Length: 235
Image (cartoon, one colour):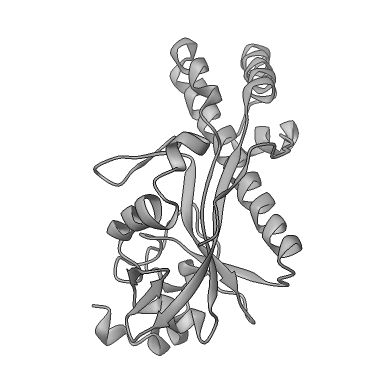
C-alpha cells in the first residue's frame, strides 16, 4: 500500500480582470471596485490551495463494482470507464481553509465574491494535481469520477465515506484541512474528491447528467454514452 502524497505548495494566480468579468463587477462604481481590489489582495496573501492523493491498485473489476486495495466501490459506470486498467488515484483537493478568517467582516456581496475566488483556487488546485500525476507517472490523459457527480446512480454520494476513511486512510482533515460532514458535505465547500485514472478518450460525469442548468457543467449530456452505460440498470 502506497503512502498519501500531500501537495501544499500549489502555486496560483488570480486574474483580476477575468474574475471581475465573471462576477459582473460594475466598472462605474468606484466603491465596489475598491472593495473588490481589497478582497483580492487579502485572498492572494492568505490562500493556500492544497491536494492529497494516493496511488491505488485496482484488484477486481465487476459488473457494478470495483475493488481497490480491499475497498469495494459501488458504481455501474466506474468499471466501464476503467476497463482493464489496474491503477487509479484517490484524491481530495481544496481551496484551503486560510481565507475563512475574512468572512466575519464581509458584506453579503463580498461573501459571494469570496466564494467565486475560492472556486477559482479549487480549479487551479485540481489542474495542478492533474499535471503532477501526468508528469510523475507519465500519463498522457487522465479522466476522473467523483461520488455524487452526474446523475445519482452514476456513483452514489455515500461512496464519499470510503474515499475519506479508507482509500485516503482518514488523513484528509489533518493533511489538508478538509472535513467530511455526516451529511456528506465537504468543508471548506470549495473542495473536491474522487478518483483519477488513465484513459484513451476524454470523459466527464457531466456527460451522464440530465441537469440542464448546472453552472459547473463541463460537458454536454451524451445520450449515446448514457445508453452504453446500461441506463436501464441505473434507474
